Length: 201
Figure 1: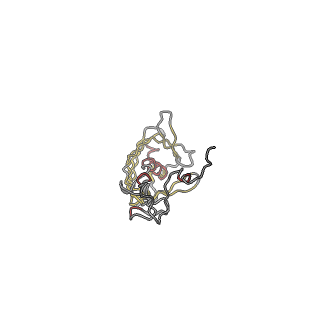
Figure 2: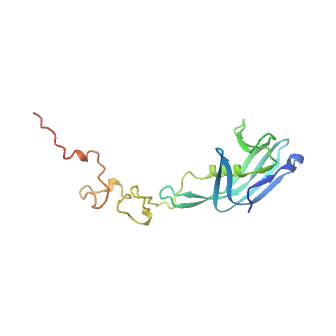
Figure 3: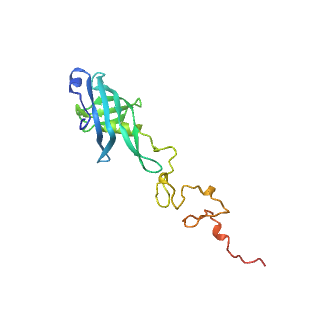
């Protein structure tokens, strides 16, 4: 396992030789908004990267990355392991003045990885690629019942006294709300039922 995913491009820049790097990672550290962020993986994530010269200071990166993210279930917040199989592919350009690697959009619409250090740290690139490939939300189980909106109880472990898992429309109007609960019929006009109005003269 390596501390950070690096690929050495000095020989490629001097003699147009191809470059290769591979290894495994249990996390990635990258800069975002001036702060160091950490992306942690459930298991060691394998990466395999090749960079081929396109002539001059331009080259092409291709390879694969297989991280397993840990995300929160969208309903009950239980941890969910999300394995990803990411195919890598991006244009690259060497600019000695670049202090840190960054992605920019070319005129063709493609993203280009710009870098200034031939000993290239791929952490930021792999982190951004991983975050873009991750789903927006996940469920630990399609039948997840979620959390009680009143007390936060995990309804997958059984019901709670608040019955937050029972939709309002399923409450029997004749039976009303069971005693001992904090629910009330969600009828905005219920409070007007006993209101005494002046009789018309």
